[in-house]
Length: 113
Image (cartoon, rainbow, N blue to C red; front, side, top):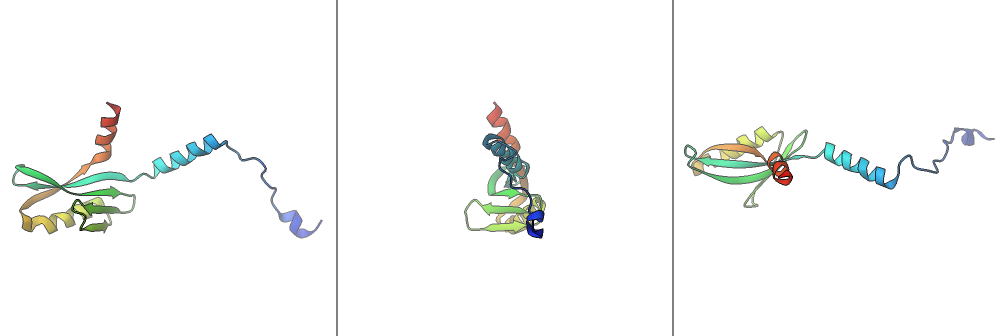
């Protein structure tokens, strides 16, 4: 037997899981890395009025936000950084404060009820 043949790993003829088990593994992986959905909501006055300014996805290492008008997209280091930038840019429009509203908790509760 030659040296190459001795080093070749054995061929796997059967996968260690069924197609159903592999589908489950892929689902677990996707769920473990799911970004969190949030909205940036502008507050006018002292709780007088509010408007959703953008929707975003929070990843482990960044946040991506799109304005509801579709004319502004933001890639930020964090949700808080995105909130701050939206707040700074909306001050001239009379916005008192921009809030982060986590939507995945609301969605989960609504789907369970």
